Image (cartoon, rainbow, N blue to C red; front, side, top):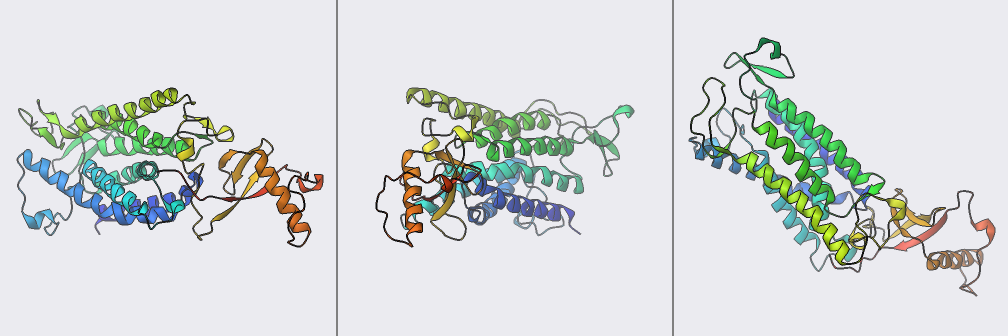
Length: 380
């Protein structure tokens, strides 16, 4: 059995299921997840292979077309995660163009950065699971460990091909990514919300920090500039520039810069910074909130353009998933008054739009049912 392929496949399935049911908590249809798989997964696999092959050739590797497409004894052993991320991001660009075409209803559209927030929340989980495929293939391990006191799993892993103990770098990254997934999931669906792109920026910073450290321990790294001398029999390499370490540093810089630019733009616009805001306090006063799917949720997966929402005791409109939409205004109450009057008269037109609401229309939980039409009219 090909355990590497099986584990990778399991990781994909787990991430797809998780993302499908999580997306609605951010106002995004679960069907968008299926679109992400169709557009992003094939490109992720192709670019992961191309990336690995290109930098392996730079380091002196030899490849044939048969080996490249996986028709030799090693199959598709040799996929680089950064290549996969590049391919997935390119797929997200294509998906954005498709979802925002003119023929697509406005309320069915989604921005590029919203796709990245959703996608990378679960990509890091897929990376955590996929690293165990490296364990099955006896790859992605670190330098040799000669100290007997450190020769124990999971700190180290015994590699049968050379009969040596090595740093279990696949395990380090898997655990780092699991913690990262918990962090990103909290940021994505937790009660404290942030601007579109914050989750993706956090991924860049978090993953970049972990990968830049772990990559320095690996004995099978891909090189942008080959080392002066490769370590012999599991010993450290000398000199050179590891491509994944360089990209990790660039990711960290990008993530920090992306968050800083939001803060600067918010202050210039005279609005509040939209970072870690209690969902019950969300309003257009926070910079970028009006463009989020929290403010303008997509229609549900059944295609309905009307969504039941409630006004809670704090005067906040929340949807059926408990997601805060916006602060209630007088018009929301007036709409409900008219709705109640129409219902009481068997569907007749309301005689007085400004009539006050009877006290018995308010439930014990102080919630008012409101019909919201989420026809987005802002520019993505």
